[in-house]
Image (cartoon, rainbow, N blue to C red; front, side, top):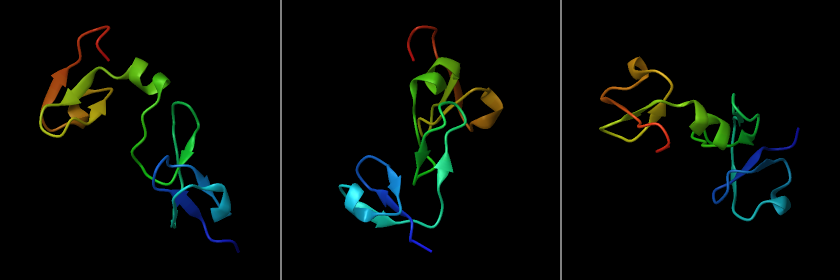
Length: 81
């Protein structure tokens, strides 16, 4: 079975390292629930996600749809995301 690789620079995922500019071995692939893109890292931002978020964490900057998903929720002003 081919080993999974992810690009450290752009997050692209492939089983063939030659297709990646900065390949790193990965054991897991994440799929974005908003746009369907695959990435080697859990952190991913895309336009559909930004259109749907309403809060950010005042501590770490993480974004979320609901305030109960964050430790220090702050509401994002409409049109500012």
